[in-house]
Length: 431
Figure 1 (cartoon, one colour):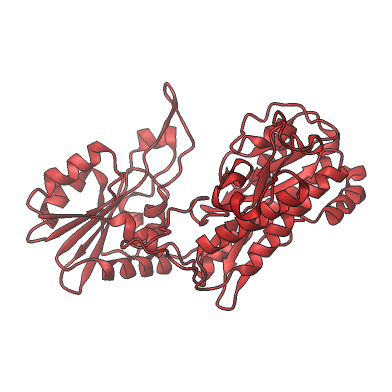
Figure 2: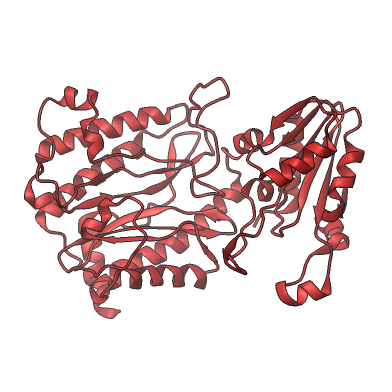
């Protein structure tokens, strides 16, 4: 749980970054239509939530910066008993005033009028440039005398790079739940028939433990399906002698986990499967050990490409001169993605990788990222040894950068072959 004092601290830190005589506005997310008159479950905008902790739609945060002083105002939906009968209770203006450490709370329907009052003698307006046209039109119609428009998302997402102790605690909680789900999948995969049965187990365990949402659509990819990177159909049969690539994480109090494990349907890896798996696992472990403050993500990417390229040469998946394969990026046919990404309020956290001047941002203590080397060997690819065709493997962990190096937040989720096989042998019979 994150307390209001921390959200207020974030607003204060953000206000210090704004130029004098400016106004900033951040909106809540809108409801999204699923079909006709039904909606997707509501999920708050991450930047708005980062600054407020408020989960309702039809809301906005405004910060007014004078010289060095600032004031913050929250706009919320009014209480309407007839609507609340259908869609649930609203916090309302009066309770919001008691709940949030802002200077005042107004009704959302009065936002346009208040903006007109706020903008006198203001030099700059900050808003998220990704806003839909209707909101931009409203903002600009009420602030037409302001000469400068600046993107507030850049400043907020830069702040989100470094996680607080309370944020890390929530990510760890998400990972505790995710561990239970992945270990359950290892125990029961041999007794199931379809990929979607495993997906259902993940969703059940997530919700049972208070993670009401997946962090993303779960991938359960058996056999050659693993060679489609974003495979989410999850409708194929589980084949006894194949592997299953499972990429699944939950969202706990808005904070994500993102874990991939590749397991054997039967619980036992073939010798060929084990060769490829251990090659990828070796890369996973070596890249994680490189993590420390001031190293660049591009260095991790480069090293992962070198290690995977060498591994593929050793197994006969690639052939030729090592440096030539690297220079011409031949390995990308089998390793086409990055080594990892930022993670936090979004599974792919909306945080910058480069500064405004296009310099790469080095790792710093408090950053959380994934490390996820993979190899994807299409079944129809006749250029690779037959025994490896149809194998797709990714091994993904969630890593916290510390002042001395790193902490693998997902180290308790089994990934070594022998340990995995022993775990399955001990537990599958009891399921």
